[in-house]
Length: 287
Image (cartoon, rainbow, N blue to C red):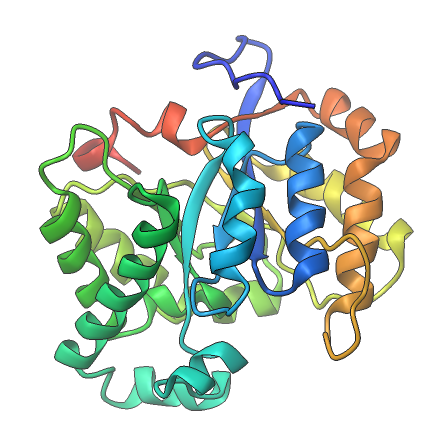
């Protein structure tokens, strides 16, 4: 069933939150699960892993959702796909490089351009936004190259991609570490370039526990979030062999599709919205 288009305005009593499902094209179950949630209006954005061999095939699943959810680039340096592509590093190695001397600017620009090319080739449009697998888009050397390439490609467009900032609205230690890897620096660089940025990021946890724990976390995130924030999730229709997050993904999917999540949205006065609907006029005034 085709979802209804998300309204451009949010009722005064509601706050508009972008619920983003990461890792589209990671595997078949992830892609199908994300599409099912979008069809039931349980998410409003998805981030694509364009280095995956499944992207060129799974893009067809998104065609019926064009214009109904944001579709963005999940910039990738640390997955098995990135390793196979020849530029990948483990997350630990990528963090050390970013903290010590930063990524090489020219190499970063080349890889960012490659991934944007892969996105555009199969989606036939610019991404609605850009974020990063394991938040690499904010790492030193990558963040500068990313803003430069986005402005080079899309600076002339009336509606440009917005950026997700990995700056959490919680005091969780993992969230603090993620933010310290460059959220404020990316915010400043993007602001100077007049690129729109989303608000705080929620949905960070250690992927442990059962569906009940995830429901408790979701209730807390919805209560703490503000209009224009992003809440990320990592759903999958089923846990596939070899996916370290498979159990957590399937639990997230089950909860998000269920009645409990619908009730949680109502109780928190949250409406799921597209970022392109609320950030279109921000740019230099964002954040």
